[in-house]
Length: 383
Image (cartoon, rainbow, N blue to C red):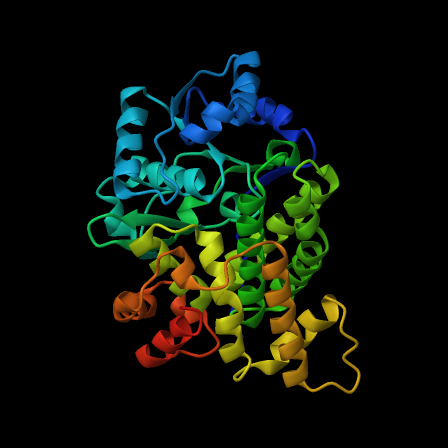
């Protein structure tokens, strides 16, 4: 019997207004000066300022690095390290969705391990823990604030490098729904569907086990119940808060069970076309799961029951079909595009996309391993 290891930050703050409580936790750790990693939108919008105000009130010194791109690059990471070293920072505060969170992880890892970020692509490639990271999440989707995963784009190869590294785990995660109020509907939809992808993949992967199943199924219900509300009304604080809980639960699920070919393929679309990760996941999710259902249809039954199917007398295949149709309806309801061609993807790149998908760190977590031709066919279904 194999040992199960469950990774999660040691301290996790959740709930309305919780960002106002971060200072004592930082001070308790004896940390001196923060490199705040974020992006220009969050600085201009005033969202980052809500965190900076807390630091200033507590007299915690900081310097801001806000050049992170939507798909953070190697240059972002190395530029951030230069700022951190020049300013003599001893910890990081990441403010944002997956992009600032991932960039901060890369910076923290390089600060303690040295070298080039490309060296750490793959599984647990570092020797030393990252500098402490206080991960303040501002989107309900990526779960990057609670996971051991991060993704950095190699600009030269146009490849998203996936790092799965226990040493990159944040020290404290902060999920305050008040920081998510008013987010645009398209961003809310994309990040929410990213969260759904996490939990569905965590439920069908061979790496799943009862603990990850339990938190993933709880997240599934919350997403189906509250994502449409959050998209429809950006000021719906109850929907935002429930999505916060869904994202936290989902992060715990896939962080410890694994992902699969939806993410493996979506990473390539992001790397080549610089597309939003959540949108790519949402479009690929039903396509990949249709194939997965041919191999592990029984894994879809608990999902179907969770979202409302009376499974009495139903076959596993019928349960799987119900789940896949429900995912398609939800995706349409929240406004996800239906065809890759709508967002600039062309058939000319499918060979490259498929080849790189098969090399992705998430690929081995899929219930079956497709051939290159099968990956191309999955892309073609929504081209």
